[in-house]
Image 1 (cartoon, helix red, strand yellow):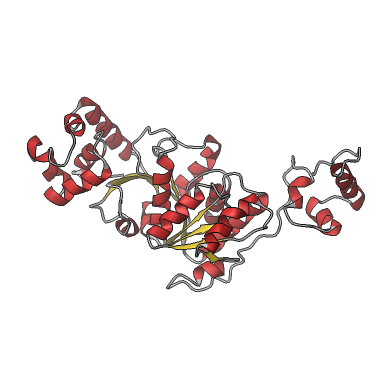
Image 2 (image 1 turned 45 degrees about the vertical axis):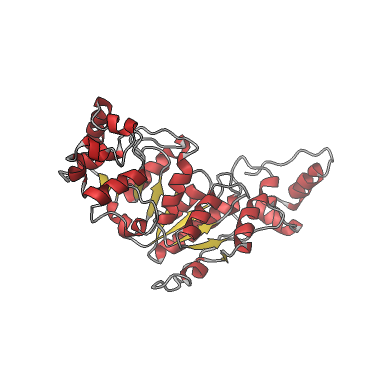
Length: 354
């Protein structure tokens, strides 16, 4: 809940169409706080704002958007954190383009915690999701808040793994904070709002749009002391987060995988370009000053297959012996052999795992 009497001024500037983040920062640098900016003549402001933004500054649409945001911030657990607030994350002040304000829902104090980003593919493997959850749990046990983007796959697994720790998790959204994307993570978003923190720099009602997510990604890395990529294809958006982290002076870590898996290619490319190869959370903690090894297991055994998975789902990309395949699948040798024969082209029904 926000009680800042100057919040309306911050919102008026931030919600003015055509007034980008860079001109807004220039206005603040030139004139001071938003109240001082808005007290200036329109001719003075015109030196920093385009005609479209200047015309929109006092419009009914902007006033309505400000009123809506103020109403939203009045609810319990809702916060709008501006550059002038003590709660504004110091880590974001280190990046080149910090947002003027953040919409936050949940434990706003997490913005002041040391954090690590854990990101990766939306189309993750079961092993990748298990690894992400295990890494997140271990990093959380060591006192680090886990930051990710609420996407399917690795992001969601990292959030779930971190929720068990007091340090919890921050989900940075590529939409307005009142919109959950993807909808399949609606329940997870509610859990994070209750136990962690949802954050967005986008105005209320902002829908999912492709150009919003690179901006979201720079905040994921900006809030963090380092960025861990668990699984990623070469075209993965996670590599944008990793590049942002490197440009912001953050450490970049990557989990290696099978040379046959397309979801390892992005991680291997990061390692080739200088990211640290990590096999456990201890490898991450060793690179962060003030954090000692946690002693917490951070790698995952191969997870059990989901009820609707087939034999292929537990084979992975590397060669596997029959005994190991039987163990992974939870099938008898006869049923496993039948599945292998079917995949080899013999007319034997492929077993479903239970």
